[in-house]
Each structure stands twice: as structure tokens, then as C-alpha cells.
Image 1 (cartoon, rainbow over the protein chains, first blue to last red):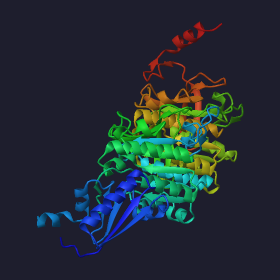
Image 2: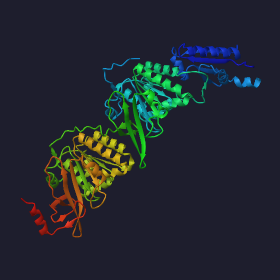
Image 3: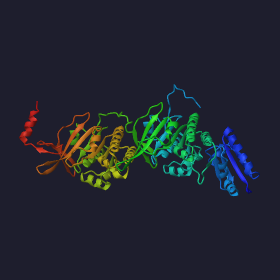
Image 4: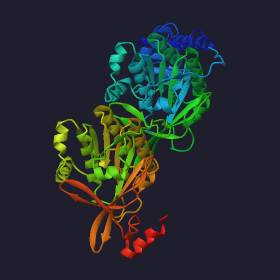
Length: 99
Length: 505
């Protein structure tokens, strides 16, 4: 896999619920596996910083936003469907090509 | 969540929307959620926005507007046409948007479980930031289109509804419906979000649109039932016309005012009552506008101001005609004793006309009102709409405790019933009939006072003539019967005398 661009990811959660924890864990796992060393991940708790959710117009939580590289993408849910996450991160087509 | 004290009845929050507080008997249930449902174009968004706008304008209550459909910039722009400066209110911390409208080119990918916790957190944050008392959410149907899992959206909306109750704000949520009559709203939202449901309708009937509002339910509190017409005015928003909520409580006065014609005063037993409604009915050209002019002239002689709504003739025609009867409308206008409002009935809907009439009366504060003719309005609305127009107009004038003269044109030249009469006659105090009378190959005119509440009046049908001095009421027709039915028959004088003799003693 040839990922050399820097990935900037933001994960919005509402409080540290089991679902939030699951999303964080799933994201870490995916990133370590596919984006090792090229990603920067930030977790934002909306209950503490509601204005940030307002700025980004977040409705659902958890929401993962891929800020970089463009295009900007949103993935909602606890990220348990890995394939969908990879699709959202534009990593899946590359994967398929390699196979 | 706060638990409501069952001993305290449901409080209501005055909305400030004209007419709504009357039909809802005080406003929306306070601290609760009310669902506003209607088809596309039924003014749901206007209602939702006006609920906040009136709160800000009338009681300084800040509000939060959650939009799922339109972008805040569009809403700001659209509502500027109502003279609601949302941007300014936002600066002053009185209005706050929660923008949940679709973002361009942004379709989220769903991966696993989620909830709308972020939305709830944003709404609560907005409510706290401006200390909102009112919140509007527009519209719930759009939320369903954002996410694939309808079940989840339902449970989240229920959570939202419960959360709003907990914060203690009074909420309005809008929802679409596909038909004017049928299920209350799409996705069955009414089942889980609100104890209170209001339906807005925009029904097409006989090629005319008619807007109505109906309070379907208010849990635990009372409201007026049935549909009420409303209109949306560019600078005022929704105005509801609370027809049957109008109370019959006008006072009654024994004071008389001159009709403008001394003979007519005599026929009525000394003039019209000061707070009475007078219906003048007759065929076209038989003197209704003349009676109106006499009525205005009679008022002016006493220094009373008249307001004339003319729906059949232009200002110039009126001036010329009145001049022909020796009444100078132009001079009366200059002396501020008369104001003429001329309009084509078709220029607006009935509700809009009604509101315009009320505004004119409020602004000019006349001592007399004349509408020539009311029946011209029949063309504009549906039958039901017209009936409501007449009742509403009549009660409004009565509440001012001023005399109102309304003219109605009969359908045929020889008289006969008219729709206006059938709707109007029971609420008018005085009915004057003007009729053509064919006599020995000649057209004459007859006048009679058919009804006059609370007063003796003459029962004769008198002949009247029109000259450059106005109206002259002469002697009763003695040898003709059937004038009112439009089929006059002659009796010779002997028969007439014998007939009247039969009823003596």
C-alpha cells in the first residue's frame, strides 16, 4: 500500500459512552493497520465543546471527518463496518487495485 | 426531566400571532411541544419562524431555530420580506440558528451504530447560550431523508422531544403531509413527538386557494375547534381570522343617527341606531349607491367621518355620481370627513380584503362605515369563505359601535334573493329593500324598511325618485301587490280600498 499523504482525522463523540469508546477503538485499529505513521487523529467530545459541532454542522455521533487529504468526507457510526470506513477514507479502491 | 405538578393546569404561552391566541384560548401549551403539520406551501415555516419572531418583538423572549431544510442564509433572506431582521436579532443574542440543513456535496457514509446525540447537544447548547424560551424545528420530515434508518430517527426524535420538555422551552415542530385530508403527517411523527397537533391547510376549491388552520388536539387543555381561515401578508406574516371565536358581546345603544334622508329617518322611526348594521338590497342601478351617498352626506352634516369601501366603481365615477346627487365627496375628503377606498374585488383574496378593511377602519377611525357593494365580493371566494368574510366584517364593525351600511346587489333586476342577503340578513339590524316597480308601462322605484331591530318602522312600500338633490321618498304604492316578489300586479283602487278595509278594527 502506498499511502504517503498525511491523514488528518477528527472523531466527534458525545461523552464517553460505550459506543464512543467503540468508535475510538475501531478507528485506532484501522489507522494502525492502514495508515500507520501517516495519520493524525483528534477526538472531540461535543458535550464539552458544542460550538465545534456547530461549526462543523455535526448531527450524528460518532462522526468521523477526514479533513485531509481532500476531499473532505464524513463517516457516521461506531466504525464497526471496516469496509465502509476504508471507503470513506478513500482507501478501499487502492486496496482493490493492489489485490 | 422536570415532573409537572398535576394540580396545576396546563399553562399557555401567548404566541403573538394575530388571531392564534384567540382560537387557541391563550396560545401554545407552555413548556411543551406542538406539531405543525401541512402540505407543501401551507406556511409551516412561516408559522415556525413567526412563533420566534413575535416572541422577540412582543415579549423579548429569545428563540432558537433548528433548520433541517433551508439554509439559514435563505431563511434570513426570505423572512426579511416580512420585515423580520433576523441577522440583527442574532447579533443581539435573541435568535440563534442550529443549522442542520444539508451541506453541499456531503453525503455521509454510515458505518455501524450512531445516534443524534450531536444534534441534541447543539440544540441544548443553543438554548442555553441565548436563554431561549421558544424553539422551532423545521422540519421533521427532512431528518428522515438524512438517515437510512427510520426507526433510529424516530427514537432520536422522541428523545429530543423529551429533552426539550426537560429544558422547559415551548417548542414548535413542523412536519409534512402528503394530502390535505388523510394521515396527519408523513412518517407518523405525530405519534411520538407531540401532545399537541395543529394542521395548516391550503385547499384548492373552485380554482381558489383557501388557507385554514385547525387545532387538532391540545392534550390536557382547551382550544377552539374546527378550521379558521388565515392569510399570509408580506409585512405581517400569518394572520388568523377567528370567525366563530368572535364573541357576541357588543353593547347596544338606543342612540339614533340620521340616515341622510329625513323621509328615511321617518320610515325608520327616527333614524338608524348608532351601532346598527344596515343592509341595503336592490337590483343594479336602483339607488343603492345613492343611499350610501346620502348616508355619508348625513353623517358629514353632523361632522361625522365616513369611510367608504367601493368595490364596484372607481373614485372618479363615485365623485361624479355623488356630484349628480348634490353631494360633494371631494370637499368632504378635503375636510377629512370622508375617506374612499376603491378596489377591485379580484385584486386580493377575501381574507386579505378583510384585513385591509380592518386596517383602514383602525387607521381612519370613522364614525360611519359603508361598503358598496358587499355582494361584489361573492366573486372572489368560495361560498363558505364569503360567509365567513361577511360575518367577520359585520362583527368587526359592530364592535366599533358605529353604524355600517352594506349594499347587496340582487341577482335579477326585479329583485329576488341574493347570496349576500341569505348570509347577511340574520346579523343585520336593519334591512332596506330597493325595488324596480313596473307601473303602467313605466319603471318606478320603491323602497321599504323590511326589518328594523328594536324599533317601530313603517311597513309601507314607498315610491322614491332621484334628482340632482338626491333621494326623495314619496307616497306609498297603493294599488300594487307583489312588488317584493318581483311580479307586481295591479288592483283597481276599489279593490285596494276594500282590502285595507277588511283589516280595520
